[in-house]
Image 1 (cartoon, rainbow, N blue to C red):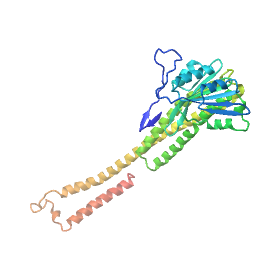
Image 2 (image 1 turned 180 degrees about the horizontal axis):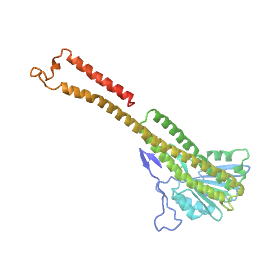
Image 3 (image 1 turned 90 degrees about the vertical axis):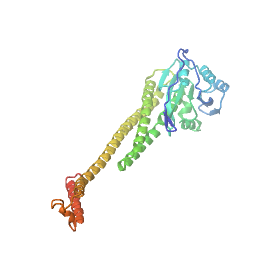
Image 4 (image 1 turned 60 degrees about the vertical axis):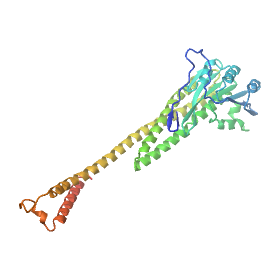
Length: 362
């Protein structure tokens, strides 16, 4: 879910037309142009082909122990279908690739596995992107909606001259490294959200402001979106750990189990922050209500002080003539009547203030 021009944009899963044949691939009109990056991996050397063609992919098959094809942009359906034919990918899985917005999941087929994940490709706007990962005996294929991913550390490890597991182990370990990078990329925005919540809390305790409620509500919305992504992600990783398929070796499951632990930790962090956001929103409402009550109390006290003064002013302001009768306010002719009346009213106001203070109403 992202924001544009102050408005929320809801991400909806695309679906094939009603009645379409299973495995029908239909491009999204807004999809980016397809671009292929081919990474060829051996224990002694590696090679990366930018803007690779399908012929490069076909030639690499059988000549390199491990092939990683990264497809960015899903506009060219013909290329997606040809990739599926080259690697023997299941058509139903390819349908999930182009119909973005899928729930994170894992599916196992005869000779390969298919994992759908969501990753944050723009932490500033909390924009999510679907990424699909296929892996078999000697290949890994990834499909991304657009440029930008957390795979740079994995690429650097592959290109490193020092020996490492990514160049000596199989495709399942490379798939683990990519999935682990996606899972770990959630830590930074979640921790940043927690830091932001602490800053808002400190500012709110000093002076509650209206915009703080808006910030908290937006942060809680983002946390809820993360929760909706991380729970199915945990289930998918648990399914991989429990799986008994030939394309995932037992020693690699140990690493997948570590990634599962990371996902569980992320869920715990999200749950904690969600409770924190809810508590801060309730505290903001309480502080705002308390501030309103203080204002109302002050206005009530001021009104209570001025009520008797207003009564006195009203009585002395009546048009009585002391020449008509000695009962018609003879004090109107007093030499010091005006300052005496003001002094008396001040004394009444001070006496009421002291009384309210002793009652702790002020």
